[in-house]
Image: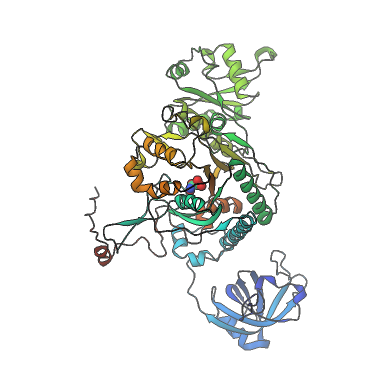
Amino acid sequence: MSISDHGAMRTHGNGHLRAEHADETVTLAGWVDSRRDHGGVAFLDLRDRSGLVQVVADPEASDALEAAHRVRPEWVIRVTGTVRVRPEGMRNDRLPTGDVEVAATSIEVLSVADTPPFPVEDGIDVSEDLRLKHRYVDLRRPRLAHNLQVRAQVTSVIRRVMERNGFIDVETPILTRPTPEGARDFLVPSRLQPGESYALPQSPQLFKQLLMVAGVERYYQIARCFRDENLRADRQPEFTQLDLELSFADEEDIYGLIEELFVEVWREVLGEELQVPFPRLTYAESMRRFGTDKPDLRFGLELADLGEVFADTEVGVFKGVLEAGGSVVALAVPDGGELTRREFDDWTEWAKRRGAKGLAWGVVEAGEDGSAAATLRSPLTKFMTDEEVAGVIAATEGSIGDAVLFGAGKTSFAFQLMGALRVAIAEDRGLVGAHDDGSTRWEFVWVVEPPMFDPADESDDPTAATAEGWVPNHHPFTAPAPEYVDDFEQRPGDATTRAYDIVLNGTELASGSVRIHDADLQRRVFRFLGISDEDAEEKFGFLLRGFSYGVPPHCGIAPGLDRLIMLITGSDSIREVIAFPKTQSGSDPMTDAPAPFDPAALAEAGLKLAPKPKAD
Ligand code: ASP
């Protein structure tokens, strides 16, 4: 037995009716999208998930007309009637069903509705709080309804591609022990073991590795992950990843699989053909050319390291920074010579807000007296030698009419600052490339060989600070590059790993790595991170014990589903592609979660609330 396409209560989806259905008697159902009542005749637009169709009620069916007078927007009704082709001149080209209408013979009210808190249409100006409070109404709006459909389409393609490649879907626990991914854990008190708690998984990392020990070989899961992070733009405390792991495999298998997957998603959902293989950049090269490990390759504006150009400079600020071991970094803005003084000042303010002392600038101009060599018009030029001017223009590949912007400071800061400026200026000046027809360009890139560790003071998670002052750049289960396996402890700032990220248009879509599959090496990494053997045994003993029973080499990755769908649907936030998201402060205005503890539940879990910190 199977069910009919539209359920037993109706014969068609509203949005599917066409001229070929003329003269058929149909039964439809849905929400009243709008009503135009002319007294003697009333028009209703009836909406369901397939779309809208116009229903007409006239005096020939007086009960139907009477009901049509009564109904209001968002009432749920069922209509029986005859499809007819609309008279010439009355057709609506903007509606797929615009050639037809349904002449109602009966209208049955299935449920009445209060006036909705906001109109059910796109492009409305309503606060997100109100939208989230009434998310069930919000999700009726065409754009959000579409996003949910795209999401389901993408997960369906994912399952097909994974199954085709021999992966099996295995569920892993939600109530578990902490899995470090660089954030805080959400804890769930245990009633059966009062005073103890579970942690919600930051990812299924340890379980998927143990599934490799178990011989599963190819695992995937569309997995919910939980990370208690500080408020940052567009993060959700719970989010979804396509989590996967495979044995007897290496980086090339991951690249091939993910490229196959994205090609198929783009083809099925957007009808676009992606070019593969995607380019690859090392982390070091990405930082040097773009000032970030998430480079947006839809535009150029590459950074130039001017350390050599200014090696013997008399330009005071640059000299000081370079002598202190820092960097001078510049980029050329095409046609930036048209920027006004005021605009340069605004960009300088922009840089100061990010902790810079300022920005220097210049404009590339034709040489005096028509000489071929270009010059730089800048407050700094008088301190520069001709070679330095030529060096700046050559390194930034500046052309006549371009502006050159300079940032200076500690090396990592200077590159990151100029990397952020590169993106901000490209957006501001409309340099983020689209295709000629205005459609989005998709620039994927693999960023590989990242550092093994980051200085702990650059970490978001104070609880992750380690004895040595380093935190893992990915997670502590990531294999070091072969040349660092023996002595990463002696060269923690140089060591790189066999991790990889896939970046799309400047957004990280997935991270993963080849894993450590040797208990001794894993213990050394823990030790280096300040996790003693006893602690390691207590926290990760189950993983290490697993490794002692025969572990295949393995690797994995986890593309973030929410961001993927956000980019595919052109949404500005992941909240637009999650059915029931939380606000930026982690609450849900609809259910009012989180809620105060129930005292009885607290007592059962053996917990007591500390007095609330006094607000001052
Ligand atoms: N567990 C990692 C994460 O969630 C992904 C991976 O290494 O596969 O970021």
